[in-house]
Amino acid sequence: MKIAIPKETREFETRVAATPETVKKFAALGAEFAVQAGAGDGANIPDAAYQAAGASIAKTFAATVKGADVILKVQRPTEAELKSLAKGQKLFCIMSPYNEPAIMEALAAKGVDAFAMEFMPRISRAQSMDVLSSQANLAGYKAVLEAANAYGRAFPQMMTAAGTVAPAKVFVMGVGVAGLQAIATARRLGAIVTATDVRPATEEQVQSLGGKFIAVKNEEFEQAQTTSGYAKPMSDDYKRQQAELVAGHIAKQDIVITTALIPGRKAPVLVSAGMVASMKPGSVIVDLAVEQGGNVEGVELDRVVVTANGVKILGLANMPGRLATDTSSLFARNHFNFLSPFIKEGALALDDEDELVKGIRLTGNGAVVHPNFAAKED
Image (cartoon, rainbow, N blue to C red):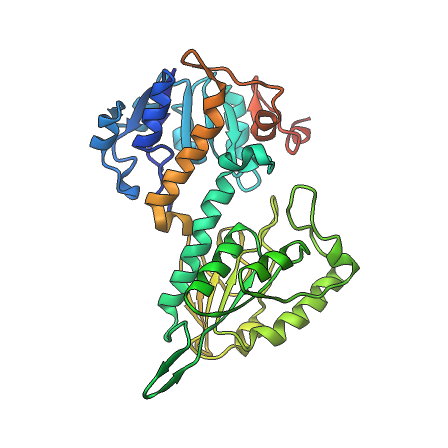
């Protein structure tokens, strides 16, 4: 079995889908590797490190994937890269089919079996394979560091001979994996942390990290979580009540970090222009949802917007990619943890009835087969 690791070419992407560690682990199961030259540069992994692990180095994308049985990537291929893929190859990566369905459809037409790693079922067995969680964890951490860097003051309370420095007030909106890590990191830096989420189960999690939970608690709030752990879309009335509560709270904050995403939809706007205008000069907002439209009105992709009242809105692209060495390592292990149980005698033998395989398979036998998209092909 040949596994190909191309260099990522999408804008802002610095990660790589395999590391020398996972190359060695796959090799022990009988796999051979072709890694595109420079694939690990963004993650500080030189070609020589892959060669030392047993991989061969190919000069181009086409040469890397030629004859490969399995292709491991971070992001979905570009239109140019699609031309080099062949029928029967199996591709594993973040596919983002809601954002770019044409790529998924083109892969089906070419007979490539595409698997969306971000669709990994959120069950105990799959925790070590969950790319969303592994990447969001470090994104939440990095978001706080970026906020601290942009903030013109210290985070912790400091008692000095010249006077007292007040602690920063940090408000985290969305308490998923990224939000929880943001809370923990801000607390470690000495900030006073509050957080909000529409899922009632998150209140205890926030409190366990030393934060204070802020939310409108009514009957709709008590039922605002799906069985898979995601937030449900809320009614306009609830959004209005929550916005009123948040508006009063946000005006008193120094740092706001937003993390709210809904699979398959544009990110919900949580922070209006009016809320931004109510904040003090020098305040900082970090929008982790900027690549799906953003949670903050006025955010711009990969830009720092400074408003008329002196608030900085950070719309930094690919936050996990700003810690590419660590995020690549985790992403690579996610790939290995998923695939290794299905490798038998040096070949990949996926069990089509396995709930994990069914959960992430987008295309097969020349068609789009995932239930969320197959109906669109009828």
